[in-house]
Amino acid sequence: MESLRSDMYVTPGERVGEADKFEAGYGVCQINNILVATLVGTLVQEKSKGFGTKPTLKIKSAKYSEGHPLLPDIGSKVTAKVIRVTPRAASVEILVIDGKPVREVFKGTINQQDVRQTEVDKVEIYKCFALGDIVLAEVISLGDRHSYFLSTAKNELGVIHAKSKAGVVMMPVNWQEMLCPATNSKEFRKVAKES
Image (cartoon, rainbow, N blue to C red):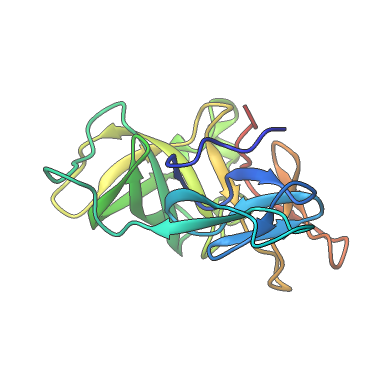
């Protein structure tokens, strides 16, 4: 795997390079041999600091996007952080819209019927999302004045970054489970299919 292009926007959980080619800098962590973004922002590659050292990948945090404020629209792909889980829905804060960081955080809701395409009546929200998860979703409705309605009912949508109960970044196992590399325990999630 080659690293992503320097100057590219990245989101938490996104693979940015390989540890045998780059050092992990600010906003980047290493999971096995893979370097993963832990912040929303621009990927920056710093030159190596001398003979025998590798270039460093870091994230330049982007709290604001240039120009006009971004607003979610129907069909927009958003990256969001789960802030609340109830039996019927997960509440999120939208951090990125169509690959661009937002100036202000928007609220979103993923309702039980919008988590997946099949067996909608069997969805248990607490087995799909947990507090702090980073989710890739699609805006399906502008909702009410408090919250946009989001969906993860496509294979490529769902959790892209999650920490285990032990606080370790997990790896996807299949579409409904992630593995904690520290404890070897599995946890349920609605996992986004890697592209």
